[in-house]
Length: 250
Image (cartoon, rainbow, N blue to C red):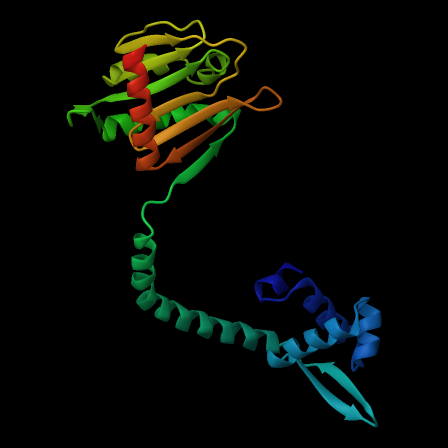
């Protein structure tokens, strides 16, 4: 039952507890057989239930019998957990700044987001939003409302399926783009520059390099486009340097 999971019960704990409610006083052996569990697991589970105040036991002759407490004890368990969570929350408020300091010492961590075919347009929307709100700088340190692309011939046909007006939106926001086209094709639409890189029998990845982020879009085994965006200033800067150096040589 879902409610038991929320109270911290495992499937085995819930099974043993419910069996004990149904059977009444039972030995470890009888419980284990009824629940189809080994005795060690059954005993450990009973011990946990005892600690929570849900099960008790008594001795009869040489045998130990376990018996479930009134199910109202579950309400007590909930109240205890609420108190413990409240105390933990108060302690956490004091601890989080210390943990945050440790986290920040680790430096910037890349964030990766994955996209399937129908979600690829979200990457294009993010390119426009990011470029508009966070323009990058060129080699001389001047602000530039620009992003860069390695345009792959095998990917282009899928990329703009759900955002056919992308180029118009880009131009409307005064966002420029430099394109290194891998393979033939592609056209100028405005505020764009294009150079070509020859490639034979290749199935390259479409790469978009924009402020603080790098998007990689390729085809999976079913020839469906999939994308991943890595948000990391270091990755972005490295890809930008490689792109700009290659651009100057083409």
